[in-house]
Length: 204
Image 1 (cartoon, rainbow, N blue to C red):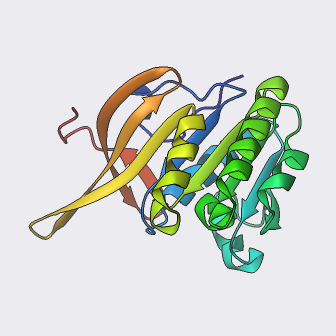
Image 2: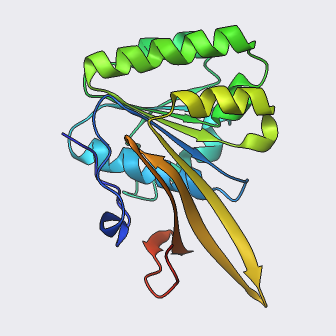
């Protein structure tokens, strides 16, 4: 069963996330990609799926983030600093594997190993109907590693923002979404732990 994107209004623009696929969300260091990845993971957890969250940060530092959805409940199996060649061990049938920050964890991986590693986990995920969600921060890795990552992604979403007077407008640039090349901008708002599509903004 495809995963819902738990953002009000998003279903007007993007379909659900299909099983056996890899989603790459890239952007700066504001934390919005992590928030959306965790929201997707929590939705999967509530539907009965196993969710593993590989983090480049110390687990105590993110406990508050992952428990904001349901106080006192840790919905993910949290694990720190797992190298790329071990990610396959966490891909079980219909599971969700979130890697955050993907870029920090692969920044020193040689290109052939990065290519082979991504090919392997993507193949396993497809066979087992699992979903991969990679939270990327392009400033941390070079252009070639970014290109390899984007090549293997089934869906590629970039989080961006721009200042307008004293207001910051945030938007998603959807480069591709599960077989469709979109190059679409979707504006959103985030406030007090809630993200929603800004339907008043211009969508192109």
